[in-house]
Length: 228
Image: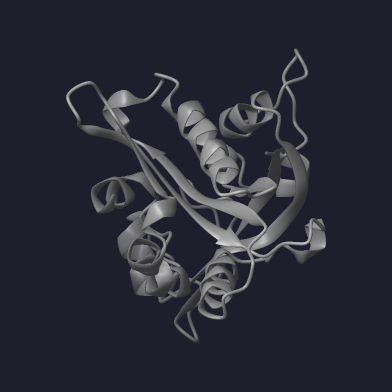
């Protein structure tokens, strides 16, 4: 799982609060982590999920992945009855993409939710093509469709094909706090002045503040609901 996480994300996607809590998934919630294997037993795709307390209202879903993790961990600590399973990541080995494995993983998550008696699977989806359109707001991008009426984005389309619907946009699912030098290393670019810059794979322009040596970047996600 660490191997696939290490190669799946853009180099700048370092949400320190998420990273600090991530290992808890494997120590406290191992029964909610998934791996798909080929005929030889090699792992070709992985999925991370966490049970949460949710009353069914879109507004009650957290704005940040860090808060989603924190809420699931606290619910477990106090013995609360969880009502939904939340996806966190579904990653396919690059050597096995375009084989329908992402769809298999979402189906596996739905079966996992059903097995544990949850009424819903929710997912803060990170659209796979949003980085190609950084000047378009996520709320507009998520509504783009193809000629056949299906979602324009391939990853949103996978969820849609499996019956999911959009609940709401969260504008700051991932929050990256880093220095100018760190961003220059991650992107291979230079930011000589303060201001907004478009960088490869970022969902929206970053904001560089050289006087404070800080770069602001918040990445929107799309909350989607799968009925179980």
